[in-house]
Length: 225
Ligand SMILES: [Zn+2]
Ligand SMILES: [Zn+2]
Image (cartoon, rainbow, N blue to C red; front, side, top):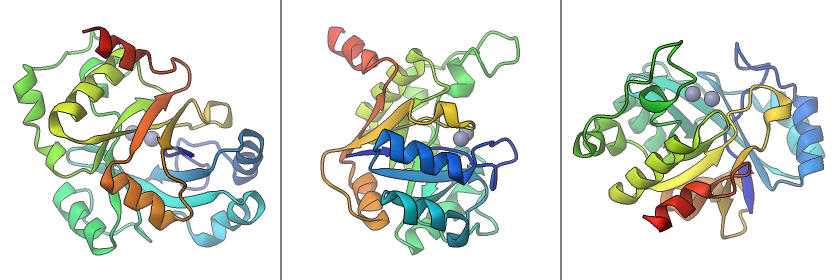
């Protein structure tokens, strides 16, 4: 079963352009089983997403992409934005109170992506043991390996880190416009019937990220090592 786990709407994200009607149309056309709304530092109300739930039959998870002191964290299970959660320790505490899940979004974007350095060469990564010792990894349940704005090198690095750290990986398009929905998804082996099932599956790591543009080329590279 597949979920789109990372997207931004026009309602909750200053840089998002996706309307709920567009999301409804895409969910129906793609047949995807579940969709998570992850606006920047904003949890949509049930009223805002009622149409999505009622007219698609898909599992709709209210999430939020929290801008923390240790990077962007996709958070599932919070009912509202809680003051103070920009501190990742506070975020972990609040998420645990509600039995939610946390996924580190695009973990190495600022290290290696050529698209986010504003003309400068990416700074690259420090030695691998320093990468693995980054405190942020202690606070999250999984790492986002596939991101619609990511490059293959990022996916390869995230899979390597997740493997070394014993963390699961996810995928999400990070779509800000409707035509980017579903570029990357999270695949679950089990059938999930609710938001609670989704969160439990992320927490227990029975999921995988898939970049539907490259169809697992990073995995192939890894096998060839
Ligand atoms: Zn982000
Ligand atoms: Zn995002």
